[in-house]
Amino acid sequence: MSDSPEEQARSVKEEFIELFFTLGWALVIALFLRTIFFQPFHIPSASMYPQLMVGDYLISSKYSYGYSRHSLPLSPKLFSGRILGSTPKRGDIIVFKWPRDNKTDFIKRVVGLPGDRVQVKNGRLWLNGTQLPFENLGQEQVEVGGRNQIVTRVRETMPNGKTYITWDLGQTSYDNTPVELVPEGHYFMMGDNRDNSLDSRKWGVVAAENLIGRGETILISVNEEFRLLKPWTWFNFRKRAFVSLRSDR
Image 1 (spheres, rainbow, N blue to C red):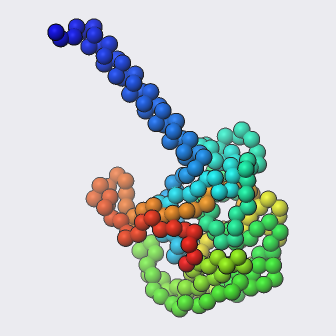
Image 2: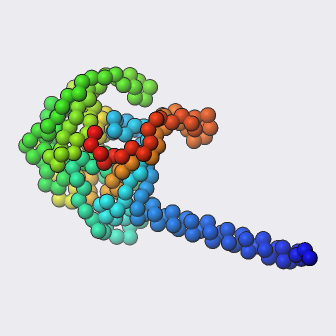
Image 3: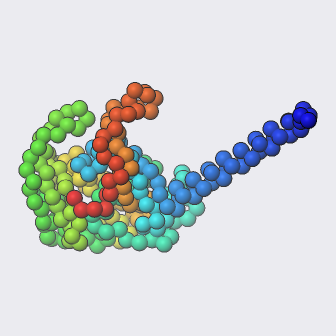
C-alpha cells in the first residue's frame, strides 16, 4: 500500500529536518576544529620566498602558542592576552594579525624573542650583538610575479640550530637598520625574501596576543594564474604538496 500524501509530506519534512541538523553539526565541528586545532591559509605575496610561494595553501597549528581572541573567527573581544600560551622558537614560521589593524593575516618568520636586540647590518641579521652564521649558496635567476630576478641564496642559522634559506636582492634600504630591543610580550618578524618584505623592520614588533598559529605544512601549491572562477586554471598546480615547514632547509 502506498503512503498517503500526508505521510509523504511528513517524510519529506523529517528528511529536511535531519539534513538541516546534520549540516548544522558538521558546521559546528568544522568551526571547533578550526578554532582549536588547525586553520588553512593562502599565501598572497612573495615575502616568504623561497620557502613559501604565492599560491601556497598551508595548514597552521593553532594550539602551538595557546589561544587568544584572534583564534576565534572575526576576533571577538571576549578576553585579552593568551590562554595556555607558550613561547615561539626562533625561526618558527608564524601566522599572525598585522599590528597596524589587528585584522589582516600576515605570515613571517620570528627572528627576535622578548628581550632580544635585533639589527640588520650590511644585509646580515644580528641578534644580541652577534651576527648570525650564514652560508652564501650562490646566485640564481628566478621568476616572481612574471618578472625575472637575480637573487643570492643565503643559508642562515639561528642560535637554536634552526636553518633556512633567505633571498638577497642586493643593496636596499632594508640592509641597515637601527638596533631594536624587543619588548616583553612581543616578537620581531621578518620575511625570508629579505629585500622584498614589509615586516617588523617597517611596522614594528608583534604582540603575543596577535599570534594565530605556527605554519606546519604546505597542503598544496597552485601557480599564480590560478583563479577559482576560471575552471581552466584549476589544474595548474605546482609539483609540491604536504611539505613540512618545520624541517630545516
